[in-house]
Length: 158
Image 1 (cartoon, helix red, strand yellow):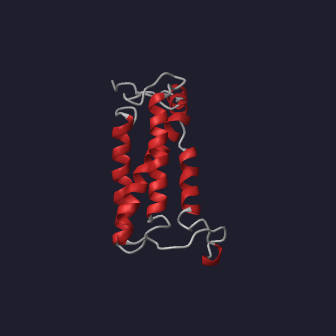
Image 2: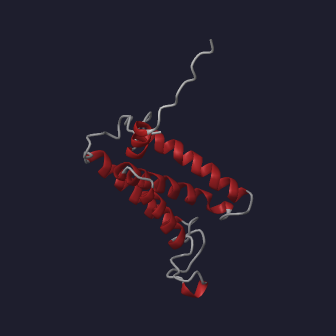
């Protein structure tokens, strides 16, 4: 998307896509709880901003994948090393803690907005701006298509 859209436009689209996916699971009763949707939405906005900067600055999806796995491992288990209730670092209401709680949501929003503020103020090494579409092709895709074998077109039948 960043080849065609600004950073904020592509982030807004990704937020809506991820929200629809997660909210659908929540409304079906398979994930989280409906009362936590507002906090989850706030946290999701912050998280998409955060991983958007990670992806854009690294030019790789892998830092974002690791961040998502870390989020799931820590916040969804209330910072429990083993996943058990007795091991939790924090105790309290599910409206405050966990992936659908306001503590994680506020923290992630602050982190995301902080990263975007830094991203907009600090130039990239290649001089691309988040305020414009990048037109950027990933090196892997560029190498693949540059080195891809040319397809031979069949000779016209005579």
